[in-house]
Amino acid sequence: MATIDLTTDTFDETVGKDGIVLVDFWADWCGPCKRFAPIFEQSSEAKPEIVHAKVDTEAQQELGVKFGVTAIPTLMAFRDGIMVFNQAGALPGPALQQLVEAVEGLDMDEVRTKIAEHEGAQG
Image (cartoon, rainbow, N blue to C red):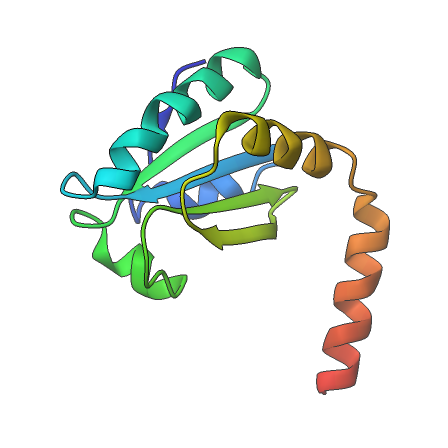
């Protein structure tokens, strides 16, 4: 599956689904973004069961603001609607593969429990 473009209209619906969604926040003028693009595309071909999505921070500025993106590229991983990874900087191919494997291996019940405990401690 090739990468898809996300907008403010499609973002929440796409990342809110069950499964894994990787989101690359990028801009056309960003050199590291352009170097990361083929790595991200290769991942989308190697892992078609994972949604690989891109957000053009110039065209979709509100999404960048919403998620506090201050440097690009920024990569976020969502699983079952929960953000489980958020990091600025282009990843080399092997690091992206490790990230995907780590997200695939997450115990989401444990993640939900930790979120509930954290929110309980905040309240």
